[in-house]
Image 1: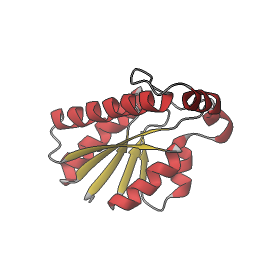
Image 2: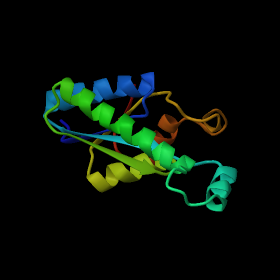
Image 3: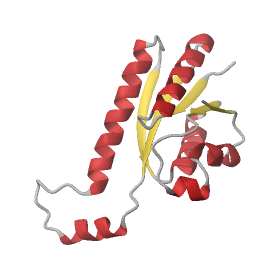
Image 4: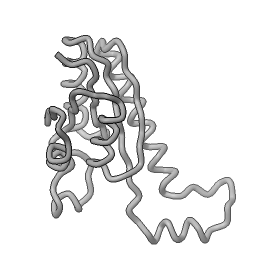
Length: 147
C-alpha cells in the first residue's frame, strides 16, 4: 500500500483530522509517518522593524516566534501519532509557502502519500488564491488525501 506518508499539520481541527487519518493509514500499511508543519513570514514591516531594533537577547522577531509555535505543533503531532500507535514517526518544520513547501518536502523525503486537512489556519490569502489543499493537489503527481 504505502511506505512513507506525509501529514501536513498546522494545529487546526482539519490538521488534526488529517493527522488521525494519516496515523490510521500508517498503522494499517506499516508505513513511516512524517509530520510537516510550515510557517511563513508575511509582514515586510515586521521584518524591517526586526532589522532596525537592537540585537538584545530578549528581542524576538516574528520569525522566531512562528518557528517556535511551528516546532511545538510538530512535536505535539508527533506525540499524538505515537499515542495512536504509529511505529515510526518523525516531525519537521519548514519556512516557506505552504503548498510548495509540502510538495517539495514530500519529494525530498520520498513520500508516496500526502495527507492534509481541507481547511487549516491559513491566511485570508487562501480565500483569494485558493486553499493549500487545492494547491497541493495541483502541484504534485503524488496521491493526496484531503480530510
